[in-house]
Image (tube, rainbow over all chains, first blue to last red; front, top):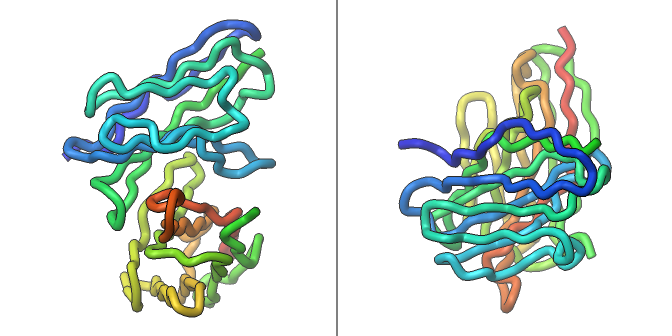
Length: 113
Length: 112
């Protein structure tokens, strides 16, 4: 079975650009998470979906970050407009449901210049 | 506030020795997972526990939900064990049900 797939693996954007990161969860998984990881802040939750419904979004990220699940097998994270402080690794994860194991993708490393 | 306190933040071990990592929880958690993040940045699943103890090779993990902690024991450390270890606990109540709370990580260096 394929794990969580994230594309692209690396992205370089200029300040002010719009970028879209993509995630395909493990087939059949109902829960999907987006996280941002930096050395200073560690892992921060951006969004949490259950059966395509948004359960939680990271309050601090609402203004320029928008995650969507267009269908159960695909999610996007849009950052608009990008700022240099958005440089980080963005991780997507999925699981069958509560009380089950979470699996992470390999992440997208975003650099905003 | 922070729901998960992970310790130590950094650890150096000589090859062949062992140690324990710990996560304390400030609220009721229903399950815990442990991950190793390798040099490439990938998060590798080590354990998922709803209770009790699991063992896999040189690693052993325990989750005590009543006393609100989990441990990860590493024995006979090898160079490939180097990396950052995270615990993540699943919230057990109310609107937080299902949310994952991550520890800040333990950076482990195994020395030849």
